[in-house]
Length: 294
Image (tube, rainbow, N blue to C red; front, side):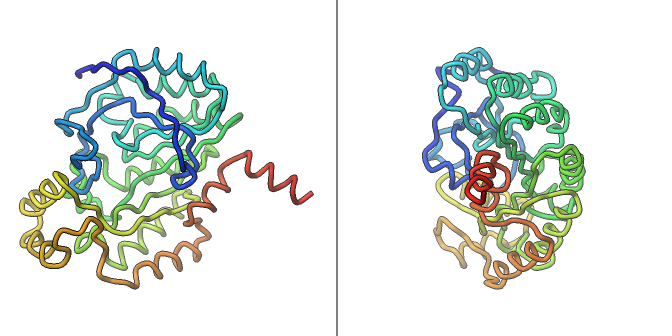
């Protein structure tokens, strides 16, 4: 694996309450080899050349140690926004594992989104962090169908394996849930799929399911997405062009899906609003509410 120069690892986040209440963000790797046909991180605006090639930040752990040590304000560190931190190289290099040890040592919290079951390797570290700070782990699950997943997310373990990992983490007291995002028009936007992903999430210990609706397409990502449609889904590219033209947000045509999503989450007692999810996992907010109640 290639290592690239990096000056910083941690970035302070503004409006973190809009994305699971994170205070900082970091990507230990650059690029991603999951080959998800819908990934917005491939877009030109992020300026990630050779997106499918994973590279690690040179001396990333040393830089992170220095930055965490210097931070006066503790908070939750988001990992995985631009590159899944549990990529295949992580099994060998353990960069994420070492970063989590530092996060625990300096009493920061962590928020991770992933499609990998490798995350269960670090259960003991998550449990340590959870004793003194906040932990929220999110599994992206776009479909309940393992075969379909292998067409739209070729480089990752199938959803059934992610759900097993979710269950294992939940049993250890970790706050876990599902990112049902994106809902891909004409591919994963059936009512049956939405209902099944939510039900399976509940059955495997999820505390929440969060969704942002449709798929996003912009420069470079649109071309890649259409190329994959041509390779795998016959005539679907033409349907997209006809329906969405050059829209950035491509929402499912079934306007009933949002209603079904909310009803199914409420049926199983799963949180689905961002504010409610953040309140549920953040210890500081819980303590403030308890004091207010008293």
